[in-house]
Length: 217
Image (tube, rainbow, N blue to C red; front, side):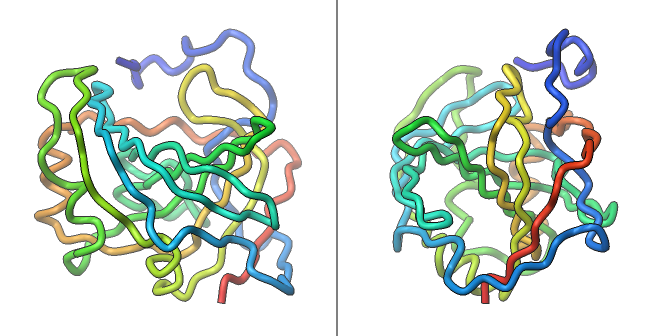
């Protein structure tokens, strides 16, 4: 299990372009896309859930078309609190949908979660967790990511970074959805009761990277 209190020991040699970052909207590049930047299968299907000690990993299948390139969905996991911020604003949780294409490129779609109304779409992911670290259990759920993101009437921020856990793989494409989805306090508490120590990596310097903002509407 990762020790988030000793993050400085994760890697002795860390590349310059790391994640997560704070996104300063005044410094982003606004682009009016002529076509959809992000497209997803009608349903992502989840088959396994793994207790990672301070996280849960939901393995599944699905397909995304990102900037015209096809990626296969691999897994979903979460971070408390949200790892990315926008203009320094925190959210209580962030979901990471991890994708990879045929030539090994990794693209992560990040979705913020805030407290509000009960989420029927995400409710399956807030219960029936494996009790033992490293335990893998069957898990059956579907998620309509297209309709979920479309309902937010949001834009997306894009930049090049890294994975936020060791081995901190670089050249990861990040697609951070601007507006959060809401879940109820009861739903979030079910996870917090089991994973109450936090698992967010510290913010990393931007180091002159470009952050692009696309409209998804």
